[in-house]
Image 1 (cartoon, rainbow, N blue to C red):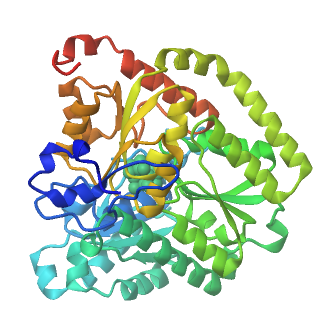
Image 2 (image 1 turned 120 degrees about the vertical axis):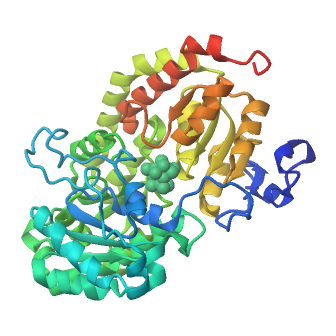
Image 3 (image 1 turned 90 degrees about the horizontal axis):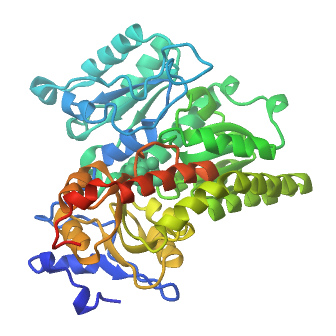
Length: 481
Ligand code: CFM
């Protein structure tokens, strides 16, 4: 359904094509905006590139590999130390591991392509970079090479370099070919990483059967968690819940994970899929290739976390596990209820706007309801149709949705809907500050983890502290309130 006249944003009168990207939610007949399509020239999108999706989002959190960006140094700089996808391989972060091997946020390695490499080819330089990095960081479990716009345009044969380096160092060397220009947003890079990593894992397992889990090592309740990136330690709350249930988490794709565990993903009994935007692809491939099924799950909020535990228990069909799930849920609710009640009382009726990549806009609809808050608008950077279907199904009717918003649209929505809080990222935070709207960093969090029952308490606390911070009394523009 086209957006009603009175909802049309004024800032888009000069780019009317944008109206196709705006809808109002409807539970019965979902309204899906134009999505996952090229940004109109002249529209200052906030999207990232395909490389950002492959390296920054899906591959980056792997903790023990050297990640080489085959690019001019700038591409490497902008993926260094930004998203808080943490790993317990850090000496200073993990209580049990005293080593210095974690690569995922500490180091940025680039082949530093220059003009002459663009003219004469960059393969030799890439090989040298791999070997030099290996010499400097010998404890790494392998190397991941990422192509970028520059190396993609040169057309360097990176897989042949990878094979030579692999022979030389005796560890896996994988190539992820997802140059920045090859899709409409970072979502393309998620897809590329999934497919290419899977193919190379399969190939590696065939050549090196010792990398697979041995029959006697396999457990009846082995699971993996797919599409979970350990933002600000979310895994510290997710993993123990499944372990209490009686499952063994053999690998996480990819939050803080070791390559050795990732190679064993096909040996698990069930994949539990959290981010259904960035990682449904690999879950489908594993299902087809290894007959390992997956369940969709959300680890945000009370109802959804409880549902995830129940569904995993049901999958295994064990009475004992189903009982255990109920016990865990009951216990966790007892622990968190006083805090959640405190926050709900103070947040009930508050209006919230949301702008995240896509999935969190549907993951969090129920969470906001559980806190008594009212979602007044939602925005997604790179969501696809299935994300919008989920938002329509979970939101109240009539919530204004904007696909791939630009800054003017964000500003106008803040002014029009006057939310008490905007769940958004760092780029938008400054605009919000000026308008006197509190924000909570919805990508890497303020003080996480935000996942599962106890994470919800942290989330509610950060929301409460944002909404009630005394500073807004002084900072708010009087016309705005
Ligand atoms: Fe998945 Fe993510 Fe997200 Fe995402 Fe992202 Fe993210 Fe996100 Mo930021 S993998 S799609 S590309 S849930 S980094 S941890 S918060 S935009 S909604």
